[in-house]
Image (cartoon, rainbow, N blue to C red; front, side, top):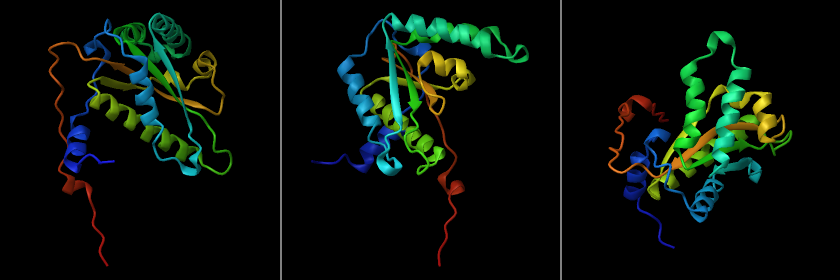
Length: 199
């Protein structure tokens, strides 16, 4: 098996951007076989003890409306009055209908007393990076959203996950709209982020 070059890998990593649902083509479906391949790539993330602490709930087609309705309802139920925003409520209902696929990404607590929670959260974060890079390589846009309501007991109950599990984000996936200008980004010089220790 020939491995991709470092140059190709660097190009892919630096090309990946967050593509918001409003910039996705909701009418263009994403093939289930492609989604399965992306999710399988996600599962090749490093994970201590091979606990594979993840589960993916995929919403597409008409199921997106149910997700949208539930997000709106749960936002109204769980958001303190002082923090409630009408624009956020609208976004909760609109975004799931703007993307053809939404994946609720769950850290499934499998490590018991042996593996700390933090390590399983780190593992699924690596998995989601794999997912986003794979989506980018396939020509898809991706957007990782983590509204506070995902941490509520009400959302956990709605999604059907255990109290010890945690939904770490909603991953929106879709083909970018025709003519979309791919977002640009910058990073601080890497020299400012490294401390070298010798001897």
